[in-house]
Length: 486
Image 1 (tube, one colour):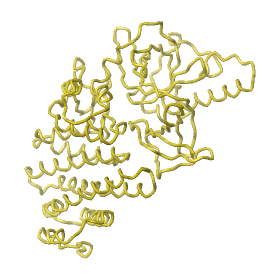
Image 2 (cartoon, helix red, strand yellow; image 1 turned 45 degrees about the vertical axis):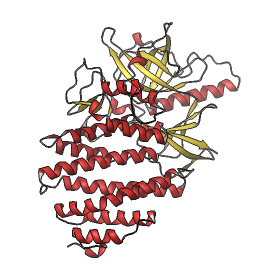
Image 3 (cartoon, rainbow, N blue to C red; image 1 turned 135 degrees about the vertical axis):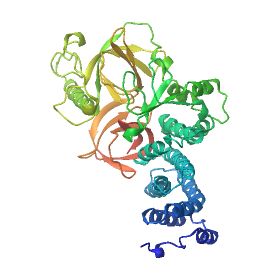
Image 4 (cartoon, rainbow, N blue to C red; image 1 turned 90 degrees about the vertical axis):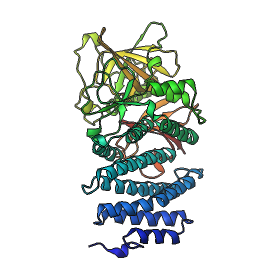
């Protein structure tokens, strides 16, 4: 039985209309809380799916207005991680999540006619796009269920309901997320979303990947319910869709788009798969270095580096041939057996796992913030963090932006974007570890493993306080914040 007393209207469309006419939305927080409770209860009540759709349709415009008003209140605040603002963000996120869940559950119900189901799937995907947009503008992670719901909606619509409107929305959502909108200012976030939406027909979906199709830089393994990612060369994906962004990249390169967009060069790099950058070596003698990847090995290497620095500061006469190596000589790459490190254990805390470092040749590029590392084949991942040792005891932190396999030499080229600053590893508490990046010319940063649970606006850090100021980047492997330490 449905407890009708939990709703301020009778469960029929006319009653909802009458209630909406008499409802004021001037107190945004109170109204948003009320709508959240109503939609949450509707999602949990046993209501005929067609009736639920009619009710939800009537509540949607007011719900979207309330989320936009909440967003405006949040963006106007000068302290985006203030506790009050964090609560407003949570309310906005939960309100949108319940609305998406309503459309999602209706789309999955067998009693819905196929033509209507197509419209519902499209509406749900459009709301997911809005959720991704609001999350980026509010410096919030999207809901963990967003890509799971997107996957199931895509599979519902795939046959025979798939049409150009649904396809364009799917493409827009994937590409907007992959362009890392967190790096942009608010106006550029809106511009990016708008331009991708208006020109989504220039993005091509493919369900098969050809090695000769160099423009397919992005992939979404929708059956795995995980977020889209950069496609990795020589990797087989199961039931995936690929995005060819060549035509959209050409549009951005010509500058023939409608809205003001200051960060267009950053987006062009992404859309073109860093094609020019990875081939922009400066002719010079390569430098041999050790590269460490994965939080476990980066932690060990940085702790070793710290111990050596302390010894050097004490004035001891130690011979250190490589500050990030263990206290023994390591064989060169051609002298040691090749062991592939599986992706499954790169990011796990297992002291018995194989050491995840590799001897590489470092080549500078024409872009000051990028280097290329040439390596024997290893199971690296795009958008993962690495450190490279140096002679001056200042290891370089970087992010792998693209991996290119060279079959003629059986090597990999890793395009690494440098993260400037001094780095060290720290444990904020028993379960939360992070890399601290400090640079006098840039903001301080903290980089956490992607699975880290971070609640609130501040953390204790070595008898100091860390205030989160901006979410900079989020990948499958890490989450990166601009912070202030005081």
